[in-house]
Length: 378
Image 1 (cartoon, rainbow, N blue to C red):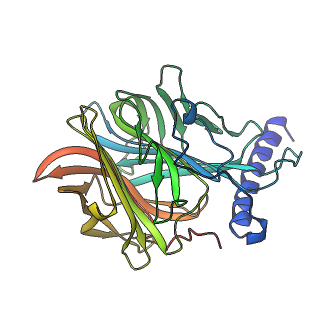
Image 2 (image 1 turned 90 degrees about the vertical axis):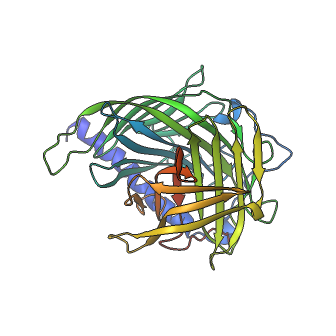
Image 3 (image 1 turned 30 degrees about the horizontal axis):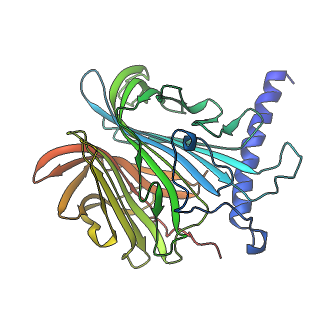
């Protein structure tokens, strides 16, 4: 057997084995749980050191979303997320195959000409030169997919997916936005139901996108793009409350230079287990909104033809006295990640308006609608 073929098979075995390990750890017994680091309000997020990986915490993700403009001024939406998951496997295990950390990646392109979101996903255990998430500075990779922060603060993002490709540079135009209290972000009524969380809104985007070929004969080819993006980085060890079924989340770059983040953690009966929002205006002033001041109210729903799931794809977000109307770039932005994280959810580009006037663009994430998420360790 040729060496190249043997290497290709070995790489695939590592990936397949990792997916099996994900399933194994999801079903592990309570007695096997590992003691992970705890999020605390006494430890503020510091930048840029905290832009890197935090392997002592159970879960972490780097999440970039944005709107892209092609030369003909037609828009695209994109998303790329890298997850790092500590399995609880003993770090004393000397085996190169020890599954102490898993790296998962999702990427998606929302192309109105294609009619729906196209996406891809990968998973591997850390190591073997296949997957890594380095500390102290954002440098996360899974095979040829990567997100790397340069010394000057810009991000190089590269994804060569099955049906599309993203080769983008994300350049900060504003300081990071520490969510919650100096980066300590509550996600439930108990203090331990929290994460460390910061955002980088109003990122300037340049690069190229290779769009999927269409049945009408359009060939896949690289297209130069510009645009704006939003990056979230979040890590935690404590999962959400037992009665939480999912969440609605919004990150939006507003046309006047402001940035808006809002989320609602939903209970199994639809009520808000917790909610929060932050609005940073262009002059840097930040307004925080507590649970009683934030809500997501559906305007219109869309049903997936693949999973039969009903999603509130057009909605009104309330933050204090302000009401923001969200309308999707296209309805079909459902992402099926059952081959990696196990979830089916809606995540897509949305336009924002107030009083009938456009005010910005963002990304809306809707989880737990296909199936209630099991978020509490038993």
